[in-house]
Length: 285
Image 1 (tube, helix red, strand yellow):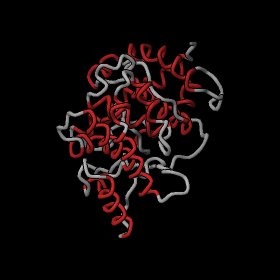
Image 2: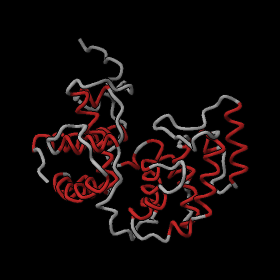
Image 3: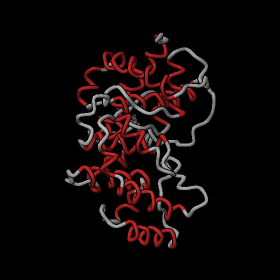
Image 4: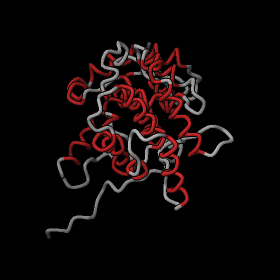
């Protein structure tokens, strides 16, 4: 693979600065946490996916100390197919889907939010979303032994995308959680494989100096990612080790880097603004 050095510099700079912002925020430092106006004024995922707000909530309040892989798979399916803490907080992780459906339908009936707005959760076409998601989780739970028999991240993802209503992105979210929960500790491709997404495809194309919308299929993305991961790791080694990054994080960063370049090049707007400047500080004069 031939990487555009200038684009690689931008990706690496974004990763380092974004994580520096995370650290400053967590340390309680006052805004602004960066001089970069794009990183200051827009919302961004973290470099390490598990540092994002909802992911942290899931690992602190939803997954608990469960160490049974079957339970972790079912919990991860619920987590990413709903991805809304307030809705999940009403449910017991291991409830039967019929009871979960009752709880979620009650929320919907009260006009309370059930599903995340961060990404699209389609459900089965032509079916009520709550009903179809509950049926999907039940189907995954019924097939947990077969799914967990897979010994790589890719094969686990492939088994999940076979379910109606579970596309490549959502299946990838579940696989990433399983990797963080320990199910994937022995997956040999944990540090080299991730599923493609529209943003990460554009990011990879930009990095290679291609037209951003050039068609990129999963097999080619996988091959390119295997080459890219060690290059990125060598440039951010301390961050990589300190945050325990994996290939899924690089895939996520490619998506955010694409968003950064879109804003920087004036190619479009991003709706998620952020008050990163904070209130003006009083003058000492």
